[in-house]
Amino acid sequence: MSVKVFDTQEVQDLLKAASNLNGDTGNARFQQIVHRLLGDLFKAIDDLDITPDEVWAGVNYLNKLGQDGEAALLAAGVGLEKYLDIRMDAADKAAGLDGGTPRTI
Image (cartoon, rainbow, N blue to C red; front, side, top):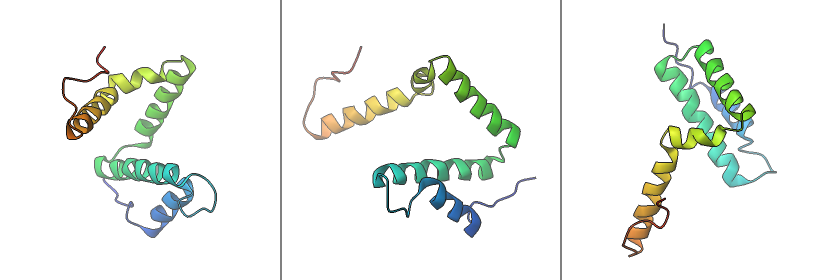
């Protein structure tokens, strides 16, 4: 059974409150990023019908990575580092810089 609640006013209000999007304090860029990421996560929960057990398994996994001091390994493991390299390479190319990335190890 898939329930769709993302577009409800209640969820949209929750997103704004959780990210302090309309707050007078805090970093506006950070608020925008948190709002987007949390919104995308909420939308994925709706679209993929992610269960509470699956959400908590993910939270516990992140907690374990943090406890073990290995959270940064997740960036490489899910391709985030590579994606950032691809973006930086594209920016270099657009700026006329050729010859490969200086970030390659």
